[in-house]
Length: 265
Image (cartoon, rainbow, N blue to C red; front, side):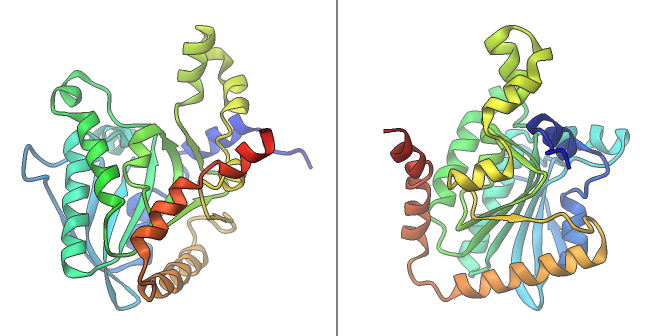
């Protein structure tokens, strides 16, 4: 059987047939109540967040939402958050920290929106603040890459105690097309770029960027969501009894890529 190439993985990660963040929220959690706005500028529909229950346990859930069809994707800005989306996410995470609720994030974005308005409203600062604040949250944080994980736009919701990836998700500092345009001035060389970016789940696991690869057997069907619900509940139970979450989270990110460096020295 032929092995799937990295660029084929990218196409799978972008497929409109994949479950989106809202699909995960609706099929895994109970009593979800969506909360809106960043209390500074407005609400960003590319980021959905609120409070819910996971097998009876109160949690805060945050997801980057792409939508399924053209109308939904346009309304959600194709899953590319504005600064207010990241600020809304941070507001909800700090609220969760205050009330002792674990945080679960679902990441699926090609990257943060790079329009002029987003830059004028502090896109870079919003992402940087998320990275800083997530590293100091006192509650357990689990982030799942369910499709595309593009650059800082994805990392802004992925400074977590546990980072998991679906087997056909991708995680990269830049899109293959963007990389090819920069290096070779030719976006058509995206397949070559994808092979060099080490963006597959297997690459991320080997580099220590993620902790677990989730199989996509029956992806989007009830058995898939039931299994993921139990995995999340079990992991949160383990993390809830860990008195040293912040230090271990810090150490985990400090170790990323360390083994690879040892191999190349």
